Amino acid sequence: MPLCEISRNEVDTTASLTQSTTRAEARPDRLWRITAIARNAFREAVRDRVLYNLVLFVLLLTAASIFIGELSGGQERKVIVDLGLSAMLLFGVFIAIFVGVGLVYKEIERRTIYAVFSKPVARGEFLVGKYLGLCLTLLVNVVVMAVGVSLALLYVSGGWDPLIPTIWPAVLLIYIELMLLTAVALLFSSFSSPALSALLTFFVFVIGHFSADLKALAGSMGSTSARWLFTGLYYLLPNLANYSFITPAAHGRAPAAGFVFAAALYALVYITVILAAATMVFSRRNFK
Amino acid sequence: MNHDRMKTVALGSVVVIGITCAALLVRWTDTLRPPPDPNAIDESLYLNGKTARRISLGFNGLVADWYWMRSLQYVGKKILSQPEDVAIDDLSKLNLKLLAPLLDTATTLDPEFLDPYEYAAIVLPAVDVQEAIRITQKGIDTNPNAWRLYQHLGYIYWQQGNYQAASETYGRGAQIPGVPPWMLAMKAKMEADGGSRDTAREIYTRMFEESNDEQVKDMARKHLLLLDSLDQRERNPKSEVPVR
Image (cartoon, rainbow over all chains, first blue to last red; front, side):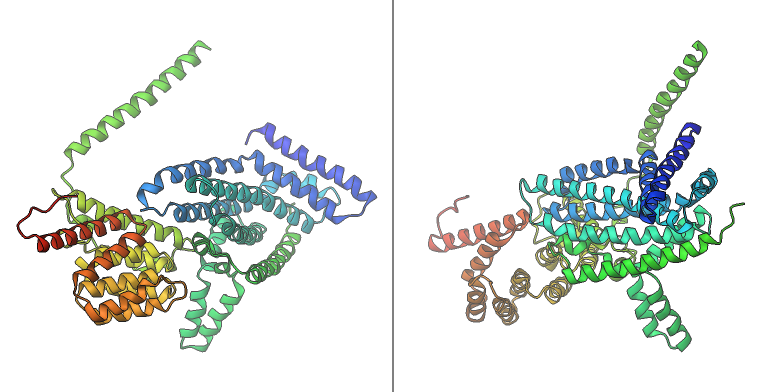
């Protein structure tokens, strides 16, 4: 990254924090400091051209809308929903992993973290702020992509398409899954190198989608200790299969409101636990 | 400054000339490559449906679409390799041994995807009738309210001359709420007069009216024309059959 951008980031971070801490003295509001860090993390992601993936996504959908009709035997609407939502998940996972693991590391590498912690900012606030900033980036990404899928459906159907309202609950579940994965990436990056953190987060993503198999495996094990181990892993690892609603959405089926609520609640609890663990690890870290 | 410009022009020229040379070399190597083995495309699938579903990491719908499009390309390529036109319901001479596994994988990845079942019911009987029945029955098991799958399964049994099984299948389909009334009429027709030309006409008329697939509609239309010409020949054995 050019030197001018590094100094611009540093200036942004410290400036927004100075502004927020000055206000914080007047209003001892933890939320205010977290918001300042989140806003800065979002600005940094935009400056790092993270949202450029949207251009690729739009090109992909445009090509699909035009050419898939000829290849899919009249199934272009289903293919557009499958392709659009899968690309949304895949691009989101890449952003969550590769930007998520660099959130803390980059601040340490550029030494901007010293400027941040010279202000009255707790380490937990810093982590939560960074996390929310990336979640905001992902939200913008996901919403723009969902609008893109809806427009592609309108184009293919030549008017209103009944699939449009059914994709949005699936989009919400994808976003919740990405929030969970971002928290996992942040946890790993709080004590490990970016490469290892990315690898471990990707493993969690893969294993998270195998959770039903873990349960089945636990049930089929002869040894009690192995059964306990796999049952433990099933409950310990995030159950990402709960958020896979792309295929039903392509058939016009939306998840029940109760299911979405339960999945969101599970994610909230899990994210809270992960961020608490990340704060615990990060608080013990020595930057000298 | 002048030196820098020269350097840029030289490097740009290397890029353009290099890409042109690479493209020409690809064309040359294409001419040297031995012709593709016609059986190479028929190598067995590496993954079965269950394994593919397990490792699809939530992208099973997209992977099912890919298998579906691959099935269409597979049949399309085989048809194009034939010198004359081939009817969609008589592809037995094309050696389509991968079609059943491809459709099976697509429907295992996305059990609610109805088009591969319909395709299996229409195209597969000429290749492997047992697989056609199994895949269509699998579709009924996972989508018990999709009455068109009963219509297709009944059609397969009817083609086999198994009018009893066809009648039972139409009867089961007729019990689904909102199903068109002719499904029940087909049950009775199969039971009473399964092998008649009237029943055949009824089956192909319904297929023509209900299918969204242009190939299936075309196939049904051809069968209806054939039935018309047979009727006409019986009425006036000496006259020429008019072509529509």
